[in-house]
Image (cartoon, rainbow, N blue to C red; front, top):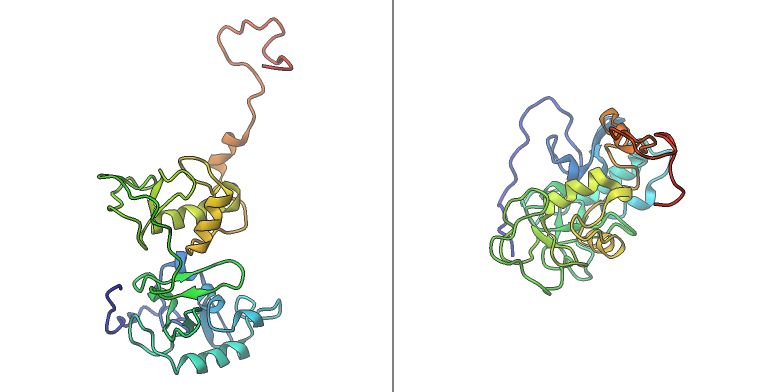
Length: 252
């Protein structure tokens, strides 16, 4: 069980609009998404998506990320009756999906509370006790490092340490693979070591890693464009192909 803080820190008076659901202005956008304000209300996209029962009200006409303000206000009233089991403050709009579990939390508190939010299907959320876990089929050897940040990962799988379910050789931190997934998106997200895709992506989404359905973040970057160009002319010096620099064999 993770250590629970008794009370979350107050958001500093930065002049930024505060999310009505989590009560914070400064959050990790990789977890909460971007903020948007309308009709006197401000909210983070994923604070809305994972709020209890709110996703079913999302529609093209909704004022904040597709959510009607009236539906958000109803959700706020219900959330005001629940305390976050991580920080202890009221206004916890996200509840564990496990039947019989009464734990609720704010989305920015999810990482401290070792909670999982699934960005697919019904977008279910789980507390530390009921969250999905990787099967303990393997443990990292001594001095194993994260293949993304190259820092140590510890000596076992945990909430913060994950392993590729395909090759069981690629270890990484939750924060590292989450950021990688956000940049790579569906087109380029696969195991950095074995290249596994289907099973790798399926388990990562189950464990709460968001994989956006779009092109990679670097796709339209001007610096990346030359890497997408096919090599159509021999630049060897000298070129010894009888057909010339602009010609190629059909095979080989």
